[in-house]
Image (cartoon, rainbow, N blue to C red; front, side, top):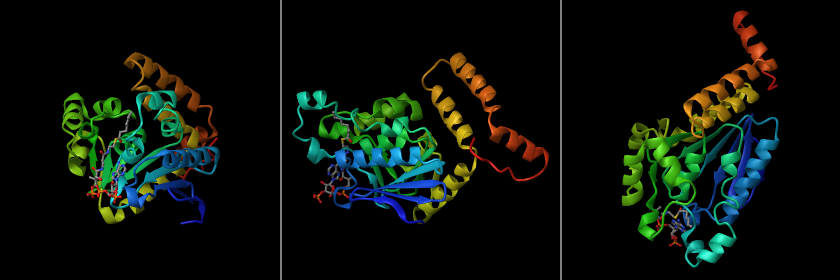
Length: 263
Ligand code: CO8
């Protein structure tokens, strides 16, 4: 692993080749998400987005916990006026949603409440065998507030989303895999290593093609099928303007490895 681009108390960012690894690090509070974490995450994502040498990001926590949700200690006295006027959540929690490069959540241990929501904002979730997902906000008298009621039903269907949100129960990695919340379950001791290998593979592909693909897949959640298909077609046509498309197809025909230049 190369020298860290940035390390601070709660968010650690390091670069390995074309991959940026972001680690949430609040071990004393189960990686609970507060302004410092979310501002640090925003800064790290800004940095990776601006760096043309980065093709993929990985977001992770520790082996024990990805993130146990929003910081309950920090939220306990917040009243409506403060939450509303300061635009709690929206003001700094959603940078991940607008990040345009591929991002993988590598989840080990608990991903609860805002932690589960953060994972769901990523393009893919890889889970270790120890991962536990849940939206337990009901147990503390509230409800998900960072997209949980919207992304969870889209990922796992209404019945299971209601079950998880209304009972607050946790879902293990295998159930999350069956339900479609995660795409892979990996051994706990090699989760990060294997995720980074996959991230490097993704980052070796044409960055503009990946970005166009991400934008197009996300359209599936924002538009009717015919609109989504139309958008996909236009993006496909647009990809023919990329140097990387010419290189990729020529390399295939010439039976050689393509040399993508990310243009
Ligand atoms: N916030 C703050 N501190 C936390 C949090 C949290 N979410 N989770 C754990 N901690 C702290 C504990 O208080 C404890 O601190 P201390 O050592 O000082 O007592 C330390 O982390 C270790 O926690 P536990 O002793 O509880 O560890 P366990 O291994 O026994 O349990 C759990 C681990 C299961 C993860 C447990 O800590 C837990 O249930 N945490 C809370 C999970 C939760 O309810 N998450 C949802 C939070 S709300 C949310 O995310 C919604 C956001 C949107 C809100 C919108 C409002 C408008």
